[in-house]
Length: 115
Image (cartoon, rainbow, N blue to C red):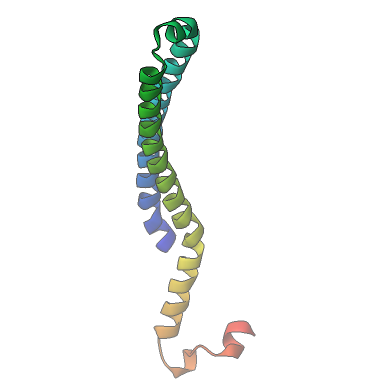
């Protein structure tokens, strides 16, 4: 039941990850396009002294790209935590249910658990 309950949570993480990755890639494409444009016209930029304004634009795009990359990484890490913890949570709930269910004849003992 625990693993079945975690399926919708994992599905939401996957949808959020897809959204953040799309935004991250869109911003990264803009930054790369700006860098290519800057390198293509490097002589003109140097001649006219436009290095700083172009670098400011590149760094602004990079800052925005890092914003989306961080969001993407946090969602991915959360998804991995849920995925890795699912079997442990399932075992813990099963063991707790077994320990709390029933009489003293079904009590959890070392011999019964490990024997």
